[in-house]
Length: 349
Image 1 (cartoon, rainbow, N blue to C red):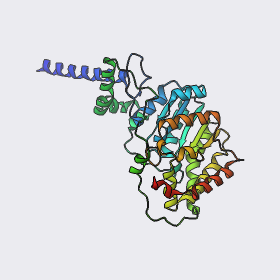
Image 2: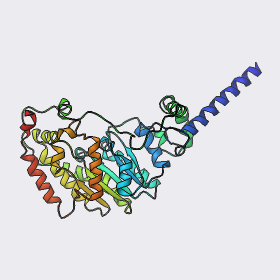
Image 3: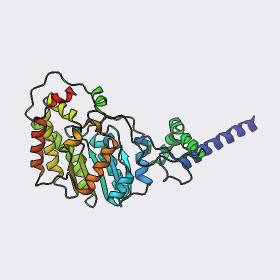
Image 4: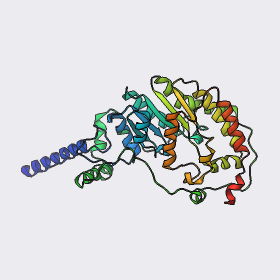
């Protein structure tokens, strides 16, 4: 009986040690170390993977944002900016989540000198603490080694991370590239956009603008989540751009009487961001050739990967940059164009 017990205990200890060693070596979310050259990695779950990228990858530039940034290619950014980029996007994230995760990367990496950040245009007019994501793997985000048991002996980590990486390695598959990471390839065009667009049949009365409470909400959102990180790292250049949505988004604002509110929120955000000397702010809402062409979009907001490539070129070349001298003129042009656009023409196609 004693011999049986010792054998069982020894076997259990060996199994635990083997599992711990395998989890440490394969480390699918880069919690312990940077990727090994002899392993293949499947990068796919942003909120599990991104913090490990921040901790252990070699980079001096970062691309962040929501799904509007997922199709950026770091290889293109490397060439255009002469830097070494990684991509850390968070689908559906609010400004607060993006700000917190970017700040972690900035705090860890003193060489991080360039940030490209897609500022979702429809998220400007939100509460500063807006957040819809739940279920973060907190054990990956702290420095407590004791709760790493939640990572090492996690069934989901094994089935979705460790084993797939092991299979990829043994079958000779290449790792997911940073260009491919989190990217999507979906059909674009008029029919795709209209399939997911629900339009109010009767146009609502246009709201004249924001209330005092809403103005303060916008200002707090931008100050906390965009201005404060930029000011905390004055030696880092932040390339921020308002995401250029399709003409259907502007139809939605017009049809529901929200356009003047959104434009006022944009002005508040712009004036705050222009006070940061290390922020380069871009606005592509005047790229009407892009915005009115449904072949560039898969729904009301999301543009295809070819637009991400063009945005990188515009950022690098300084096209669409907003300054203290031109922002009011740009806002007025934006207002006149979208308030007077013939939206009914869209639905006659």
